[in-house]
Image (tube, rainbow, N blue to C red; front, side, top):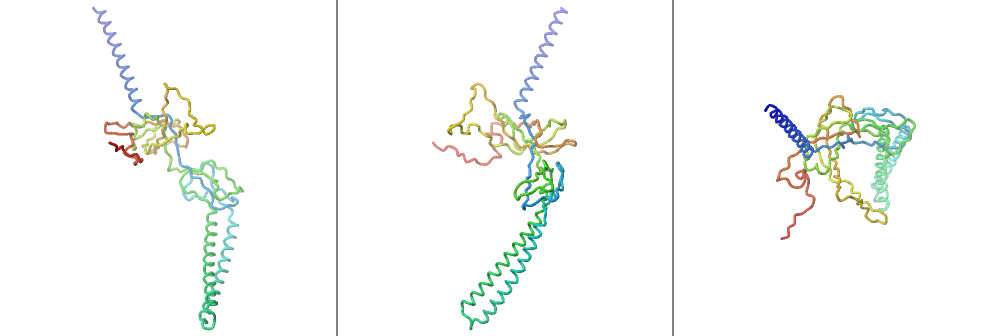
Length: 314
């Protein structure tokens, strides 16, 4: 009798272990299916590409690579000597145009006073010359203002708080207007871009909290969903030889879920965690409950009318 009870006890224990294991496995699988998560996350940041507005030789570089800068800090300077000469030339031109304007205005006034003895054509010509001289003076003043602006813009400053990156600029280099010479990472724009399988998107809501784990750090980072990408590239749209559609071969029994980018701003960065664009992250988002009242995707409430009209045919 004792051996029978012992055997039944072992069977019961084994059965309990099997049931418990099955329950744990089921819960783990259900959580995997319900909880949107991905290991394909990246740290992203906005890069401000700073190009000079004037051309010239770089006379000084005030920053080093990876340096933190604040808005308004000097990054580098272009040799201002040529620009100073341009200002002096513009000032001289303004004075010349002013004197010419004064002379022509005085002539026009004198001719106007002598209209009884001068021809109407002469009076009109002198008045027109005075008006043209005034316009030329205003143009010279504008040219002077532009020359002064160019001189001020020879000192290039950071437009944002951030970090200088990949600095290759050296004194003596020639800077061309409109060509980027320094890039600054906007420190206020660090965020996570998570690439989620399309099967997970329906569980994601704008505003849902997100937990981020960087590969190189143990501390979790908190964030929230700001937006969900509305499109990814379709390789089948690329035309092939002779302009024919280039349709990739697929297997009928294997379908790989596409990954959709989800933008996740960072709410809080723990002390000791250093962010760098391109870092790998694992992202887990608190799942949103899907109810029968929900229609379409999990972000329908946040999207505008896409121009699709309901079928009104009877």
